[in-house]
Amino acid sequence: MTKKDSGAWGILANAATMGIHLVSCTFVGLAIGYFLEDWLCDLGWCYKPWIMLFWLVAGIAAGFKNMYEEARKLQKAEKGRPDADGS
Image (tube, rainbow, N blue to C red):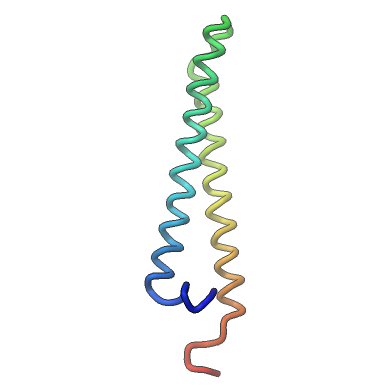
């Protein structure tokens, strides 16, 4: 972590980023499932609501994966940072 990212505001920013990852991935998965299901129903292959549910679960899984990777990145950065007392 750089000096700019340290402190309470840096921690808050990182937590907000992790939350945004989860929510945005969930909505993207839901949108893909909704529009794919709508398109396939127009073609005559209607599997409501299974396609949308599959992509929703895939989006949630991608969000948790992104949160996990961000947490690992923060742990690695924290491990390399010197202690606050200067030792």
